[in-house]
Length: 264
Length: 301
Image (cartoon, rainbow over all chains, first blue to last red; front, side, top):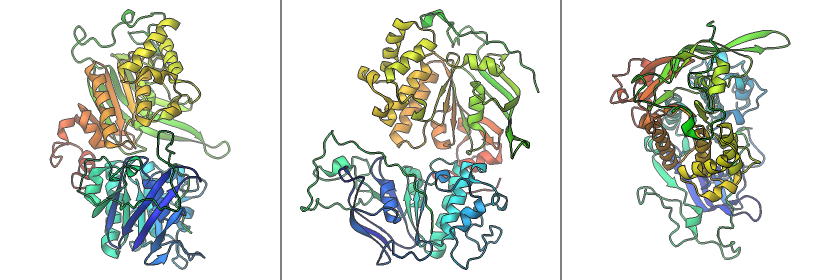
């Protein structure tokens, strides 16, 4: 199980908390939807669970062991797939090299023509010698997902992977992920703002509360999804480290990521 | 390659007029022939000359046969995958293609063939682009300055520009204090309203909205679509370029489906229903069925 427990994250030492005591679990073979209006920290939670950001407080564990482990042992079992594939790969590398980077030692060449290869059905053989800018957005996102699957992960964090793609490519990416969920028990965290897509793919949905509302009585967001979906559990702020009172003076910072879902 | 009669459209932009009334009304459903198209694109093909390595040149054809028509008062959605050439068509309509682009086919404005230069002159008054992202605003200038500049470009003098800038904001439901703000002080939704105000400043007969909805929360998407429908109700034509079929269907009267640089089908929005059997082309049917609310399946086509 991939679990984040009591996660607190903020940018800088004085910024407002982006994640306040958030608990999330993803079990093998299940798809957990993560929903919330923009600015609620969905992407921050995804990068934290992927081990790309160290939480200020709280722990991330994979199958009961602290994650990420040091020293690194090959590709990580948790792979993050980002919305903008072109920002997640080296623009000067050929697709062949982009994919090869994710292979485990001893896996051999990437061969999309081989039905047993994780890239099969996602990557076309003729793309291998091209560079990222020579593929369309949809094609590049297929490469992006193939790279994550080549690492043979136990968990995939899909951060808005299809929100700038046409319906057909969206269905192709998700059918592939759902296939992996069924066949080999992959656990998936699906981050999206599209309710129709969540209805379709998620076994259950976690809603990140509005940070402003957290400071109120109930800590619930103002969405109309009352009671339908379990919410992220909230606890009062620890006494030891009092928080700045929320107020109009608190600027929300944009959650921008230029970090790649580079696998080691 | 077709040679263009590189003339301005029948309704030349009013350069010196100070009021909107002095320019010919862009939409005149009453005395114009009932269904004269504002914009007609016939077999448009766009290719680019690129230097490959050293001096070796190659030609990349991005658009290989697109046709569509937009009439006054209607929303036409152009739907297709990324890389299908949708935005290129939009840019071609506004005469905004880069210099290394070559095009063939015909573009007609109110029935008269117009070349790239004439289309560029139409941009701002006859046609307007509603861009996707807030990066199209000047980050160093206030909203007021940018609106006034748009008004000046649309032919207003200094004093009327000020009045029109404030009026344009009000029309978009924004308070006057927004005039003094810089783009980074706007929320995403406010920024889009400012972009809309700028696009509508020249009272365009045709608005080309390029991917106006991605990344927005469902409520904001509805607001943007509603605004586009409002533009059409006011009598202008709207060309909505998008990859989001379900969003497009909420406002579009007609849908043009494009694939790999070609239009594969033009149909009434109502044809996207049930199993999609009213759709003529397998690709349109596959797109429809792939929606999460439908079969969510990838069908070969």
